[in-house]
Length: 135
Image (cartoon, rainbow, N blue to C red; front, top):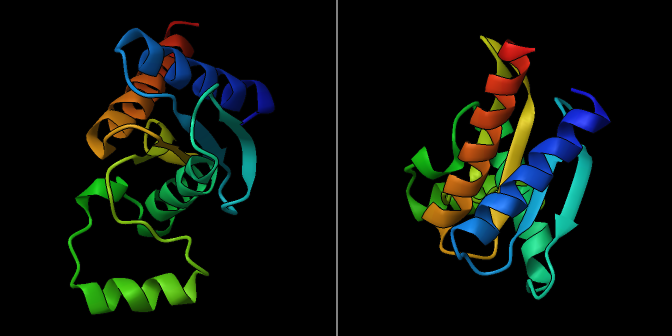
């Protein structure tokens, strides 16, 4: 995934949040090594949302599925959070970025309700995928 791709994903997710009237979001895109490519926090978003957005993206990447689909007992979640230095957040808002069956990275959002965070990044990824296949 290129920097331009990551920028486009973040900009689209922020725009989706604004269009739908969500509270200000932070949106992150990470690569396959779980390193941040792009992180932006919208005007008025709480500072902690940046770290949570990154953690949600990393959670999707670590588990190879949307962060909101993880259903584990609290003790296991605590252990995994310890292993990953707190970068494991099993709440909606982190999704994989794929090109067909190929995983390119992940995107995460925070700042609204978790399902709204996820809707923003899911929509951004879907639009990005549609743009790639059309171009």
